[in-house]
Image (cartoon, rainbow, N blue to C red):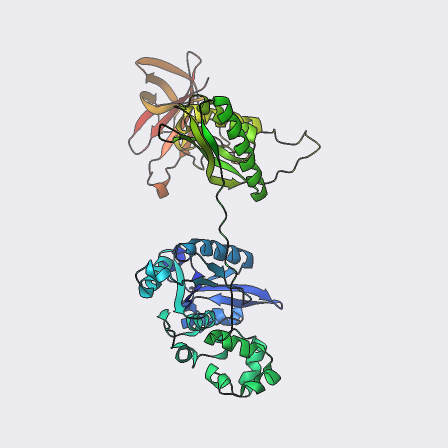
Length: 497
């Protein structure tokens, strides 16, 4: 007997969950804002779907409530990703599209209970996993899709299991909406006093199609298991992998290289249909007398250019120990990334320089020297000099991604790794500076510009305040002096070339 597991899910962010505020999703309908979905906290205050936003806001406590626009496409993509994740519980997972706004997953768990030591363990495993993902879910296992869907949405418990002979009892007192009947038909049934499923199956079957059409009987038979209902499960994306087995071991490097190039071209062609590129590529050489040889390359940006990737692979293959022969080779891309389309302009005067060659050079350096040896400077949003710039290992990021400009202030050419102590003679704390003793030498100051006060970032725990002076010594050298106000000490922090 097929057992169906249904999740009715509603996603909340971790911050919203921890804050405990009611969550309301709205959309514009007929020139007014209407509630589309809401969480349980909002429902406890009387908020319902279809209610005008003004009325919902009046029901919520003052100053509470998270109101956000409903984004159908984002919701569908998130539900599809959740369906892919749910394949760990069942190989057959589908997104229920019987409603206007899908929020339900269908899982065929026939035989899966043996892996989880029973249906109860499987039920709690799914519920606990959803809770860890900050997702509110109502989980039901039942013999049919219709029964599981009805109990998950309109049942009294968040988790429930319906036995094979308990379907009628489980859905008997549920409203007609639980049968997935059109709202217009439900309104017609309610007008003549048909509110529950039991009222519907008590009527003569021959009279129902003449009054309400074929849908009520079909949905009722599907819920009771008397009509067939199938799902369209999502299909897992096949891995980006190509392999070839030889008829016998070969120790000719040229033959291995030719096969690797062919497999690489096939892999890149497959990735082109997915509009993706390789981020990490692994190569395996199956040797007849030794363990398989594994080689890996890393690319900073997704690429499906077989010539560029082969230039990175070839030096590693040439140094490989083939032993007494290679019996098979395989290329596998465990990590891929989507490649965005760039618009090519005919007028190249205003176009940014093409950085494909620059990225190819960085990929070569990364695979020869190591990822941690290729870094790039990155601006930070900070006025503190030593925090305004940092070196990051993400050296292959596009140069046009960082649009931030440096602080529009005069800064020294060389910033010392750490401020060096100095002795300064001043007439008053605000300058000017007359004499300076630094690195054991005494200097007379001819020019002094400042002070420039830089406050500490109190939100990061840096509460120190500094006054900076640009001074010119009698030898013509410009120095950047800093006075720590809280410690009442002077330092040399930078030098102009």
